[in-house]
Image (cartoon, rainbow, N blue to C red; front, side):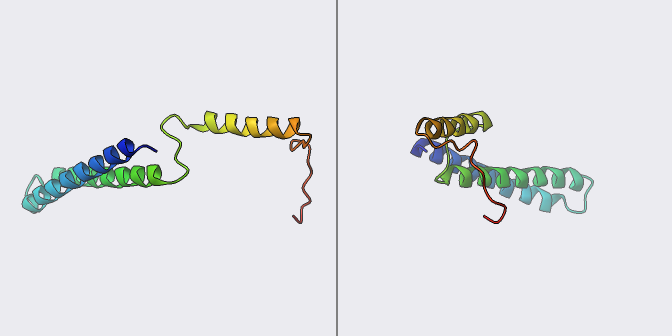
Length: 102
């Protein structure tokens, strides 16, 4: 992971936190008025954004992060490469049997 990706994720999370604080104040001000429900819905959405951006930051800070293009097809290709290398080495993992007891 590059430092730039991390920094963008931190900035994104900080922006979401600022927006959540702003909407929390608006919700407090709207309490007991006809705009309370709308303010609550916007606050809930802001909380969801904070949670999502926090999860994104945790994910990219994980040592196993592979970048945005590391979807299931990349993982499948990586697995295929490992099996291919094992077969070439004479260790056919595709036909190896594992006993039910380990």
